Image (cartoon, rainbow, N blue to C red; front, side):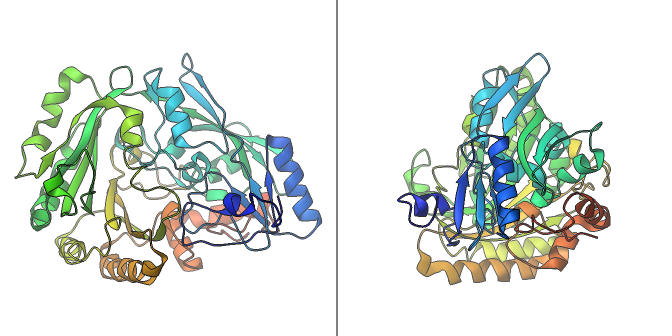
Length: 443
């Protein structure tokens, strides 16, 4: 598909409407052979290569000006093996595809918080979600991956085959090749796939009290219960009560995946604390919670992202959250803190490329709005918020939520794992053919 094709503009568009890039051509692949052919063609003709999965990447790195986009979106099949507790997923699938297939068996794979997110990008960068405390991150559940390398060859990476590549894929992003299929472990969730979860919303004035309570409570909760905390504007739509529409709030979205006869005990503390504006906790299929925010955040909005990892929610950081929560610039703009303790914390820091294994939270600040005229407004708010908050962080961010922020930020995101990643990069992509990403340069 070249620029004169009728569908070119629609196909080159990505989730972040702030990104407007014009590739030389888009190769819509159907299988691993197509992916190999596209990569070989690009190398032979000196074209830049951009690998596009679900198109959700914060910096829009699935497309690039004058590049050949290797588009995997037509490759979205999912096959569950309930006897083995695994699911095989093609590289262009979204988590909606995966959840639809697994929840019917009462199973799920740890993933993110939007069903429209692409499997490939999220899985290769880490994968933080509702199941992280109980079952680890997405990278902790990757069994093997089929990968097209820079020379067009196809290999399988696992503990027994290409183990260095397998290690690097689990957090190192798209630096090492185009993953055409993944095999993940999947796990029981709730009862026949039905969990108990939903939001509890508090007045914005209660932010400091809620955050102090939450930071102490969360590590004491059973790992079947997780909840991310955020500062947000209550959406002006059902099921939220009309009298709350447009009100700024501090909210926690809870997800309990254990036996239902233990739910009341597990949820008692989170249902009874403080004076909530709304308690929306109820039984629902896991994929319903996973897709709950998709309608609020459709493709094409303007996004500006900033991220850091936090080992604690300090009093100093709470004061920053209070300040910038009060100045949320638009109804879609928000801040979230996602837990990475429990099962994720028990993985050694050097066991996968994702290095932050001391507990805590992945934090993200996003300025979001439909109107391009507000791009500067939302970007500046996110930058100022991040600058004020960064001193309380662990020093690095989460690559899945980074824009184009430079080599120092990429090195900080990988901490002590960076030198090994650079060595794997040298072994599998010495010419840095795959560099339209959060790039790890070959050692």
